[in-house]
Length: 341
Image (cartoon, rainbow, N blue to C red):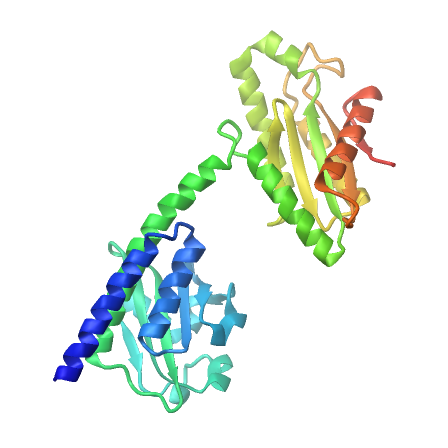
């Protein structure tokens, strides 16, 4: 009895410590890692997953070191039978010998996981994810006191997720241009540096397209700034769809200028995409009687690409794209020019 009380006190102390620890973590990734790692330690469970629900899929958002290769994987919910049942019933699920389950995930067999448990993470009446732990051979089943501890951990996870989501939303707004919804200049600078580092490490090309709305000052003078803002929003929508790969970045570079970061893209491929973008904007037929290129809104685009080396910097790519944009304007606007230097 004394031993049981001691264990309960230790776990209460640990849960309090976890709650305090979560106050020092703001990003969603940090929160999820903290919850899972502390749960794994507290429950003596080297196998651990923290999944979030995305429609009919589970996204593995945090893992323990033993199963680190599974981080980021997407699994159909119904294929994770134990987790699926926990989510469906809103109740924790337990298995004394996972190896003997017919509907087990056989990829986990090499880990020799025996006892396993899965707890749904609930926000109000909605299941948003699951916290799953496993003990390996020789293992031991989860006891009633384990249930209460895990339930408390899942509740902490729910509270932390809500808090982290608020932070993520605030962060998203700080990195987004309020008018167009595209990445703002601050976000552009950060992502260009990040993609530059990735391209340097992998010796891959990085392309940049700078887009300028032709005669935009005259557009504002003719139609007013409110209509000018609407024009910017329409162009931004096309830019957003032009960055069709997950790692492409469409940004408002400043004023009537936009930018498109295209990782793993040559200048030739980037120029093709830029030309398709130019034609789509032309086809929108946004009236602009004061334009020097015709009666509708057009854009000039400068494109450049670099395979980064130790002797180059992101500003070199920007300078090259800017030079190409200058040439596009010099040659009569409403065109795409690729940097030739």
